[in-house]
Image (cartoon, rainbow, N blue to C red):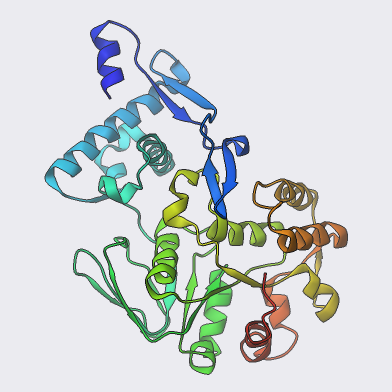
Length: 337
C-alpha cells in the first residue's frame, strides 16, 4: 500500500506486483510439498491499463475492507464481500480471485485477514469441533455435516477415531455412509471436498493430522483429475503454494483407485480422451513426481493403458465391495502409495 501512496504522491500511475499463481515454473518441490521459488516470475496489475483497471480497483477496495476487519477484529465471508459492492466486483469469481492474490501478496491465509469462505466439504464420524468463536459442530449426526467456515488452528478437536478416509467426491461419500462404512470399519472419520477441495476442507484435514496424529487414507478415481485432487491434498496446489506449510499433508496414503488395480480387478473402464491424455502428460512433469517414484509409475501406467476408471466401477464389482473388501484390504495389507 505504501508504494501505491508514494506513486500517487509523486503523481505516478500506481501498480501492484504479484507472483504469477498460474505458472508451474514458479514452484519447486521441497520438504515433501510445493513451495514458491525465491525468484518467482511476477506480473503487474496497472491502473493505467484498461484491461487491469477493474482488477486493480477490486483489490484496493478489498484491502480497505480487510483493514477495517482487522482493526475492528471482525470477520466476513467472501460471499458477504461480494454483496457489499455487487456493482464494482461484478461476480463472485472476481472476489475469490482477488482474495487469493491478496493472500499471495501478503503471504498469509485469508482467515488471518478476517476473510472466511463458505464451506462445501463434508465430514462424518465421531468428531466434535469447537471453533475459536465457540461454535460447536457434532460430526456424528446422520448423513454427515458441512465443515465449519471458521475452521482454523485455534479450534479444539475431540474424537475417538483411529483413522481418516479422505474421499474425492460426494457420491462415494454418500454411498459409504449408506453402507455404514464408519460402523463396520471404524471408529473413523470420512471427509470429502466434493472434488477439488476448498481451503476449509484442507485446513481441517491438516489440523486433524497434526493435532491427533491420525493416519489419512485417500480414495480417488483412476484418472488424471482424481490423481491431481489427491496431489493437492498431499503436496499442495500451484496457486496456493505460498500456504503449503498450513495446507499440504505429505503423509496422506493413496489407497486407490490405482491404475494397476485395473489390470488386476478388471472393472469397467473408459478410454482416456485427448484432454485426459494431455492432463496426464502434464501430471508427469509436476515438480513432486521425480521424488515420488511409485506415484509416477502409476501415472505412466495410466498413459500406457489409455483408460480410466471411476471409484463407482470398483464398487460395482459386487454389493458393498468398497466397504467390506476393497478399502479395508487396501489398508490392512498396506497397498497404498
